[in-house]
Length: 223
Image 1 (tube, rainbow, N blue to C red):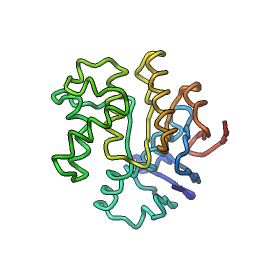
Image 2 (tube, rainbow, N blue to C red):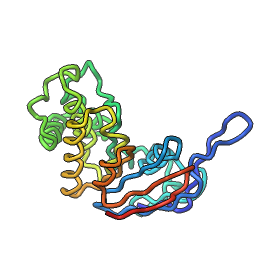
Image 3 (cartoon, rainbow, N blue to C red):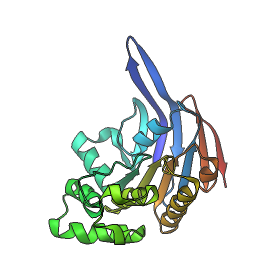
């Protein structure tokens, strides 16, 4: 995956706000990358573009060798559903559904056969050590378990890219360490992991740290 001179602007009244001001970045398959920087530096905007939730205003986004610019909305949606898993600071679990049913939800958009849903959800839950909670509701989970369920949901489509936005932000130190170790394990198993974090300790676990300020890359550090 590569970004070449990516700019993202948003209208604000009669003016425009520049969230990204010419980002060039290449991400290798199997890499673990941390994106860091102060609030308002463009981290979440960058993650949204990497995950095909948003498009650049200018520049080039190449995903799996294909220019995102050339894709229609339906094609982009299929690419995102097939190839990208998202993990957020807020777990976004649906309270009325069981843990397994929450994990199954991306399979609806993927178009998977209904008979595949539960076996795939259970395999994803097994990967994060949560298969024993499959029939529980989100309200019955601890914070760490809820984040594990959210990660299982991200993994159920077997994405090539896992994007995590402040994945330990709502967790205590010990639980955050558990989630950090899980992301390490998933990366060791071959997943490409890109995470946004303010947590320096979590960032140092990545092989590369890209720091942003005012929508620009100001440094890259390899661990």
